[in-house]
Image (cartoon, rainbow, N blue to C red; front, side):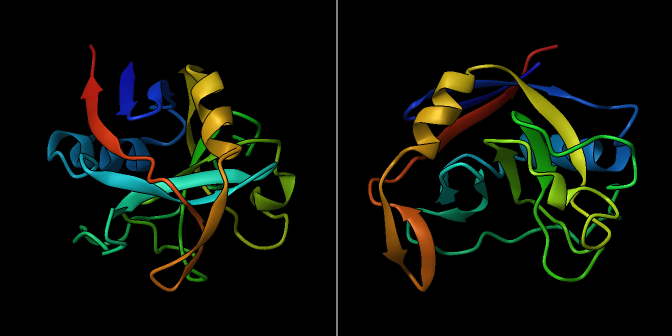
Length: 161
């Protein structure tokens, strides 16, 4: 299991290694590098998702590896509690940012509106923490919308084998 430790509590994650090997390996490499430590949940939209993995508290993007292949066609759905890779409008553009679905977001699935967003894991513990983050008041900051007014910081991500 992987544990995302935040200043709001811990979130346990189970990865879908067989269904999304590229995304899972990418995520593990960022964890091993300590990339997520000190990043924030920079986009929080109630009844949709919470996004993190790429920005520090000053809303500065952290350097990333090259983008990975999109695995949205792996048969997994963007259901409540699943993790998916964030990306731009370019299909194969995901790097370090990911989001946790607060509700089932079928329109993000493969073939819904486009290639889709690759689901690579699910919350196994701490969905109450995810829901609490999803309910925080947000505003505009650093040219971004939906930013929590009080930062939600990832202090550490650990791999517990």
